[in-house]
Every structure is written in C-alpha cells, then in structure tokens.
Amino acid sequence: MSEFLNGLAAELDAIRAASLWKTEREIISPQSAHVALTTRPDVLNFCANNYLGLANHPALIAAARKALDSHGLGMASVRFICGTTDLHRALEQRIARYVAMDDALLFAACFDANGALFEPLFGEQDAIISDALNHASIIDGIRLSKAKRFRYANGDMAALEDTLKEARAGGARRIIIATDGVFSMDGYFAKLADIRALADRHDALIMVDDCHATGFIGPQGRGTPARAGVTVDILTGTFGKALSGSAGGYIAAAQPVIDLLRQRGRPYLFSNALPPAIVAAARAAIDLAEQGDDLRERLFANAARFRTGMVKAGFTLLPGEHPIIPVMLGEARLAQAMAAKLNELGVFVSGFFYPVVPQGQARIRTQMSAAHSAADIDTAIAAFTEAGRCHGVI
Ligand SMILES: *Cc1c(COP(=O)(O)O)cnc(C)c1O
Image 1 (spheres, rainbow, N blue to C red):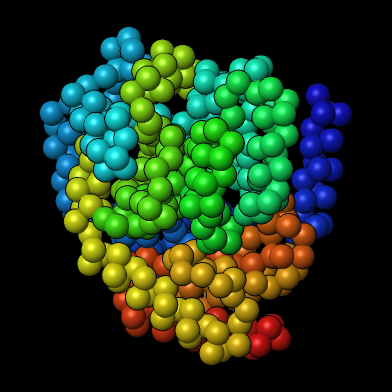
Image 2 (image 1 turned 60 degrees about the horizontal axis):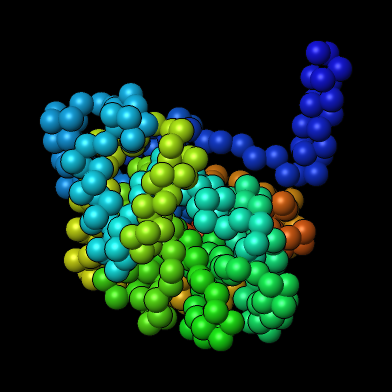
C-alpha cells in the first residue's frame, strides 16, 4: 500500500513540477455571466459552456420545479426496468425533431452517449475513422468497439480520403467517419460539406458530436450539419452546455440505430435514468433555443466584440467565428500566470495546456455567452490588456 501511495505521490509531484496542475475554484452562486466564489463575491465568468445563458434561466428552473413536484426526485432505476417517464420519451422525441432525426436516446452524459455508440454498431468487419482532435469520449467509445481503427490529422481531408480508401481496400463492411462538429480547444468547425462528399464517394457513414454547437450554431441552433447544409447519420450532443447547462447526453439517428442502441448500448442499459427535473428543463431549453435568434444574435455580437478588441490590444487569437475564442500564449507556465492575474482582476478564465492541447500551444480558452453584456466584454478586454502587459504578452 505505502509503495502504491508513494508512487502516486511521485506522479503528483511530477504534474506540479511541470506546471500542469489543475485547481478548482468553488462557486457559491448560480452559473452565469457573473458568479460568486468562496474567495470573492463577484467575478466575470468567461469559461463556462453557458453559450445561450440558460444555465440559470427562470423558465428552465420553473420547468424543473414542476417536474420535481409531479415526478419526484429520481427514478432509482435504469430506463428499461422502471426508469422511463413520459418526460423522458417527450425529451427524446423533442431533441430528435430539433436536429431532424427519427428518434433519440438519452444518457447520463454525452460522454456516455459516445461510449455507448460504437461497440454495438461496429464489429470486427467494420472500420471507424476518427479525427485526431476528437473529444476523449469519442476516442474511448471507439476503443470499446472491435472495429478496425483509423485516424486522420485534424481537418485534413486528403488524409481522410486516404484512410477511406485504405478501409475500403481492407474489405470493411461498414465504415463510419467520426468527428466533433466543433473542436473545443480551437473553436474550429469540422468541414462537414467535404466530409459528406467523401463519405458519399466511399460509401461511408458520418457521426458528428455536436456538443459545442447544438442550440446556437446553424439555423435555429440546429447544429453544424444544418450550418453546412448536409445530413449526417448519427448525431450526439449534450444538455450540459448550451441546452440548459445541467446534465445529460443523447444520440439522435434513424429509427433502427436508436432501436438497436436502446437494446444494446451498455451505458444506457447499465446506468440510472436521468432525473425528471433535468429532463423537463432540457426540453424547455430546446424550446428557448429553437426560438432563440435574439440569444444567438447577442452571443455572436459578444464574440465579434471580444475578437475585435483583443486583436486591437495585440493578442494572438485563433481565427474563427465560434464563441470559443482561444488566446494563444505558448507555455503552460505563462497561461497559468495569465489566468491567475486575470482571476485577480476579477475575470474568471482557465488556462489550457498539455495534455489537453499540444505542448507549446498553451492558451486561455475564453467562451462568450449571451448572458454577457457589452460592458462585460469590454471589462474582460481591459483585464486581458492589463494582465498581458504585466506578463509581457503584449
Ligand atoms: C462536453 C463534451 C462532451 C461531454 O459531454 P457531457 O454531457 O458533459 O458528458 C462530449 N463531446 C464533446 C465534443 C464535448 O465538448
């Protein structure tokens, strides 16, 4: 035992020594543009996935309260034994309609949705082709399948076509291309129109994880396929980001896909049903998102304002239009020092560094929200400017 614990202590020391240690600050208010921390009553929050500002929306809280009263706290069961309520089915049908699929299946988290997806649908005779920057849950989900695995460099369509040819030449029965709709460390979009064309040419399926898109990207916030004007075969997403910020994930697809996953998806079969209050709030969130052109307008106006101001101040940003806006800093130590300074100035941001992003590409990933005011954006730019001068970044 002590040898085991001493081994862990050495590993922990190495993480600290490499400046890769992550700490958690405790929030004592609802999640919003401004939050209260145990250490400070009001900080401006630029690191939540609260894109539409719904995490503390009165309509969602009211929907959750109503479901608490009508359906109680929790189901104490997996879905197929006695954990399915009318609310669960209503949400599955609602999300499917929103993203234009036949049906959908709920999970405790999108991490579980991606973990459930591949193993029942793709076996030894099949091939899964994955973008190198896909989310950890897609990588893990693919690992659980016996299919042959291929990987292509992020967004490299020539490399994707090479792997498609290789998989076809290898005699694969089914081939699926798996990609994030938006790559969360960079805010870059998957090239779905190109991927669709390649999939058609080589008779492959497409799976898109739209966690950083559904609710605010594309017409009515229907996600990256709608933005690109293409259809995909399987879509996964979360209720932990724009669509309420609470919890839960889903797979949306054609009926036979959903039916089979309902029978065979292990994280679905062997895990408790989502609490009814969360389910009801998620459905209210889809209603608001679908009608939410005003929220999206504010979100993208905030993103444009922040980008313009930061570039003018001399910072290096990754280009794009997504409300994920990475401020590039290089070394982990600098990203951490900048984040600490910004926190001191009352702006809550987080440094991202290896292994989450490649060595030497440490950054502060800022995320805009419809809940931010223009004044909030300007306050953040001013704080970045002060911190950047303090640390010789600008
Ligand atoms: C956040 C995220 C997930 C995980 O979603 P949860 O519902 O929080 O488990 C999966 N995939 C991508 C691309 C994500 O950004």
